[in-house]
Length: 175
Image (cartoon, rainbow, N blue to C red; front, top):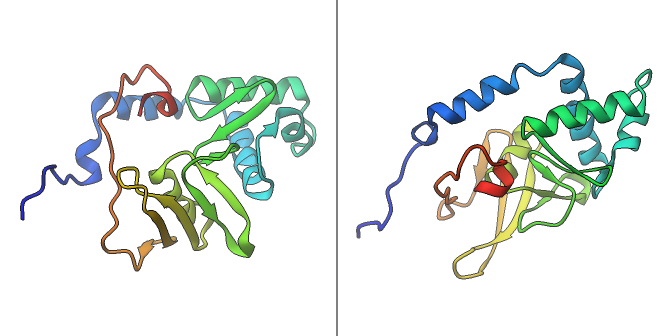
């Protein structure tokens, strides 16, 4: 049986613009990276969008204005999405429900921005997770257990990666 699509390894999906975008992100200042780390930890700790003011409360010695400016720099580099004084997403986490529910240890439910992000959560946290979604073609429910070194027990499940949109757009808008 032949496939109607071509299977490619992840490395084949990278291109010069994508690599340049990541190199540009590396120019962010250390405090912006500290803020991002705090945001990611808060997304794990609490469900829903994060008030920037609450993020600042978890960074002693740094005021709201300084944290807010760092969030703006992170948003400029497409690492977070902030709206109305809240961080709505910080890859891999979404503060609003998506089609990719991630069950952390203890049954805590968080949402991932996309399937690739959901599969990255166990490696990020160093713990296994259960990912619940559905086939976007037939709507059949899917449940995948993933450990830090990859998915287990789901040999027939694959992730579709569409063509990349214009990389000048933010990833969550262009994929």
